[in-house]
Image 1 (tube, rainbow, N blue to C red):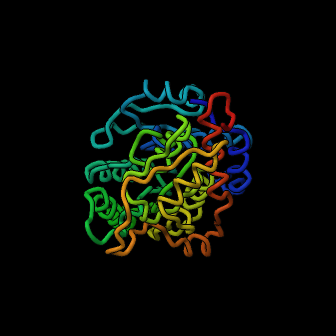
Image 2 (image 1 turned 90 degrees about the vertical axis):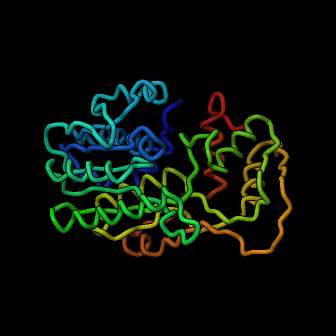
Image 3 (image 1 turned 120 degrees about the horizontal axis):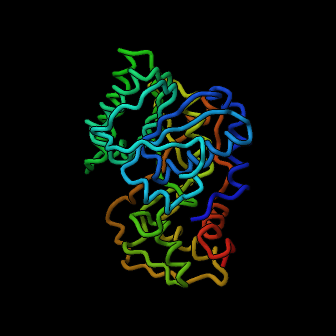
Length: 315
């Protein structure tokens, strides 16, 4: 895969420039660093490290370095990024101090969460960011992942009572951008995949659920800001407040291609129950941290399509 564009990297740096002095000459430890969130954090860290001369470094816990080398060789070979082989539940603690820790494993069990917190207590960690999920707001049915996220958030807050670590919590919703898998359980990724193949864009349901999508460059800005400036034990929602139906999303993606591609909706809406919504309120994040969405959905989709297109050109 190609590296991020200078446009996106400069956008993140312009909005985080004042944060980075805190990490100057220090080390960061990251779990989940080879996934969607982690790759964006590594890209933006490396860029800030070079542009600002931070002399900082990052150690990434991974179970499959070879796969990451194929995905992002420029990051795998970056001098200030090293890798530590191991499973989140059993990894050997690396030596030395890590003032900053980011726990971004998407499906970490409680055993893994306890292990990373115990590691942080002995590694001189001052601030730890837990990348949680908006799924914690689900009332019924509650998925196993949502329950694990809730339990992990609680564990993070409990650890602040027995240590000097500031625990920062980011509840992340839905995103779009480079590195988002196009063949996984992400509607917008699947729609972009269908469009790149020439269409049609296929909606498997009736298209009535509401979602919102946040561009990954803004996501990176918000996550770094929460790590450095967020209030300890205070969850911050990360995502867009601008909701739209899956049907409208499909048509928005279709219009990003020239000519627009066809959209097919598999089922007719029944209107016998309220539409499902997965759209956050970001009032706390905006008011307390001064953050805002700076890249709208149409532009986010266009940039993602361009990144995935051969030669970096929009169809």
